[in-house]
Length: 391
Ligand code: NAD
Image 1 (spheres, rainbow, N blue to C red):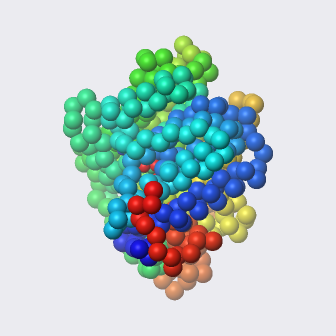
Image 2 (tube, rainbow, N blue to C red):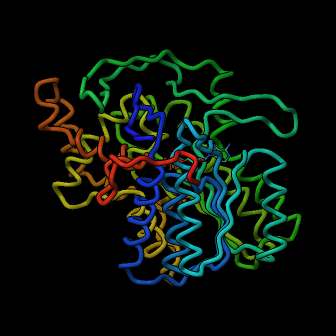
C-alpha cells in the first residue's frame, strides 16, 4: 500500500511504518551525537510510544545504556489499514535497542489496568529484579477505574467561565474562533481521574509493595503551565486541575518513597505539537507563534532535545536538580522567558488570516506533526509499496 497522511481536525488517522522507524532513528542519532549521561540502568517508561515518553526512553537507553521497559496503548496495523504511529515507534525502538545490545521489552496495553501492571511486574521480576527510574508520560482520553470498572473521560474545558480564543487548523492554516462552555463539576472530577496523579501513585504503591523499586529510586511525571493565551482553557481549566492533582500526588509519592531513599519529581515541559496537544483548542496557534519566536532566537526544542536536557542538566547532572518554589523542574524555562512571552503576545495581537503564514510557524508545526506520524522524513521513499502490518 502507498501510505499518504490523512488528517482530520488536527488528528492524523494513519501513520507510515518506515517513516516512524526513521523518526525514531533520528532521535537516537541526536542522542548518540551527545555526551553520555550517568543515569539509571533499569528504567520503566509508561507512555513510551510517542512524544515525551518515547524521547525519554531513547535518552535512557542510548545516552545512559539503560535496559528499558516501555508501555504504550496502540493499535497494530492490518493488511489493509495502518497501525497508530506509536505502534510502529515502540517496535522500531525495540529493534534499534536490540541492534545496539540494549535490553528492551515492550508491553502494549492499558496502563490503568491491573492486567498491564501485573504483566510489567512479571517482566521486572524476571529480567531486572528492581527498577531504578520510572517515567510517567501518559496523555489519555479515558480511564477505566480498575477498582470499580467505571469509565471516566477527560474533557478540555475552562472552569467557572466560558472560553473563547483564536485557533488554527494547522493543515489548512485557517484561523477560527473557538469557544468552550465551562466544565461541570463532574467533568472536572472525571478529567482529574484520567489525567491527574492517581494512577501514577497506584503504580508506585504497587511496585513498592511488591519490592520492585531499587534503593534511591526516582520517578518523574510531566506537567504544563504555559502562557496567558491558553491559561483559562489549560492551566485554569480541567486539564490544569488534573495537572495540579498530579503535582500534589508527587508529594504523596515522596512520602511513600522515604523508606527507600526515593524521590518523585515533576518536570514542567515546553509546549510541543504532539498527538495529544494538537487537539487542544488555541494551543496550535500559540505553539505556532512560539515556534516562530523560539526558532528565531535559536531556542527551539522538540521532545528529544527537551528530554536530553532534562536528563543531562537536571536529573542526572550529579547535583540536586534546580527546582522552582513549588519544587518542580522547569524545562519550560526557555518558553517562559519574558522576552519570548512578550514577543508571542505581540504577534498574537497582529495575527490574521492574511499574515499567518509569515508571522506563525504553521509550516514547522505541520512538518513536526507529520513527522510524529512518520511522514516527511528524509531518506524515506514514500512512493514505495509498504505493508502496514510489517511490524
Ligand atoms: P503523546 O500523545 O505524544 O503520548 C502519549 C503516550 O501515552 C503514548 O505513548 C500513548 O500510547 C500513551 N497512552 C495513552 N493512554 C494510555 C493508556 N491507557 N495506557 C498506556 N499508555 C497510554 O503525548 P505527550 O504530548 O508526549 O504527553 C505526555 C505527557 O507530557 C502528558 O502528561 C502531557 O500532559 C505532558 N506534557 C505535554 C506537553 C506538550 O505540549 N505535548 C507539554 C507539557 C507536558
